[in-house]
Image (cartoon, rainbow, N blue to C red; front, side, top):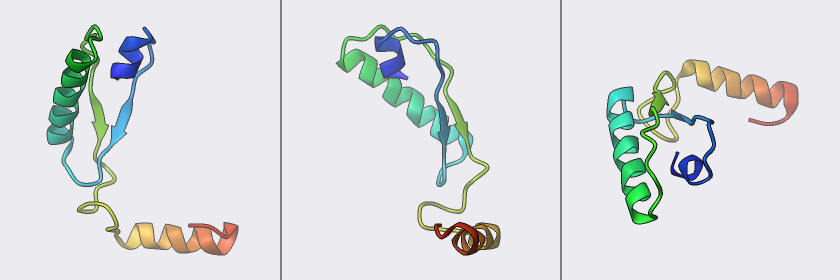
Length: 81
């Protein structure tokens, strides 16, 4: 988001959290965004922080049965996971 502000781009960033709930992740990202703007002297545009948490499985390298099945199907059909 800081990079978008620096280059005056209207785009938005959507984050994906695998370990924190949406509210906490958005709080952390917003704080970091503000800190980066200050550190690099970039005009803070107060962009809306958007984080999706529908993909949480307790953190990185964790998965549920649905993800395991999708991974196995990807390997069988396309040769990758």
